[in-house]
Length: 299
Image (cartoon, rainbow, N blue to C red):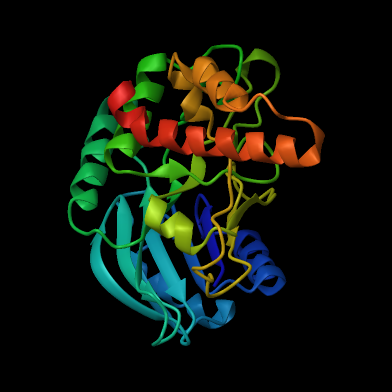
């Protein structure tokens, strides 16, 4: 079951709709989330026929900004938990036998001085359920300084506030393939800003279920934001298979990281041959997973 998310920055232009339809035909996602539709929900809902998706949930735009829409294929069971100007929160089942998961489609607060309200909304959403949880969309904030490309660095306090909110919610970044940023203001010289504002984050339970999920940054000239395409290559993850190991950059926030890696690597002095190296690598992976579990308490 594949997902598509895009801050389209308005659906009033025919070329934007044409690009959206072309992306749908190329990727065939089962769920499509659009933010910044800048239209009333009734007008946006008419797009479902062009997208080939039978059902939709919309949130009206306010003035000339905002507006959300979630479309989905009739073969997927989607039930609304809550909709808000900043998110659409739903339960999703791909088929009657599949595990029910929760997906929150996000459009983050664009005003910096109000962004803390968005993080509190995320924390409130977290407290509602213990089901496998994915959040995807435009969060309007970066997690790390290296995700912001411009002459002026992004204030560290903003990055920390976002990371703290995700940590409190038990959500971690899924990573991506493609361009290292998702937003480009297309200005010239020192005024150019490129930053990763759009992402997918998930709790550990969701990651265990869909360990093969890959987020792609697509390219479009119709918006300042890249479309996101979340590809889940196997529909039903086999629980007996081991979870894919991925290095998490947030582990580097722990001062003792290097010491603990060396300790795990050197526990057994016999590392000769391929078998010894494999065993040492497994010990390091185990140590890193243990470190990851401690990060929220360590920072």
